[in-house]
Length: 85
Image (cartoon, rainbow, N blue to C red; front, side, top):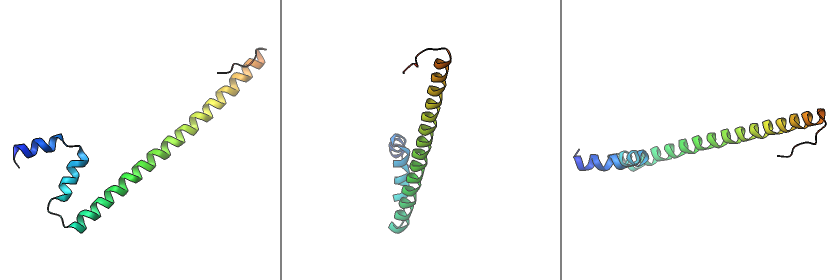
């Protein structure tokens, strides 16, 4: 491989480099199948990350609600008005 080609590939995003490799010497059907599998894998990873973020958000909201309830209880015990944050 020439140095100009290597320099060009080093500047590419890793996905672009992978796509270039898929296009070289593979029949269209094999390449298309590989691209579909790669796309599905990316979608699966994205969905897992979204689900993880949603779970974390729900846990954070639950923790905030519990902390606010605890603060309200403390304020009640010491005879102060609840603090609204």
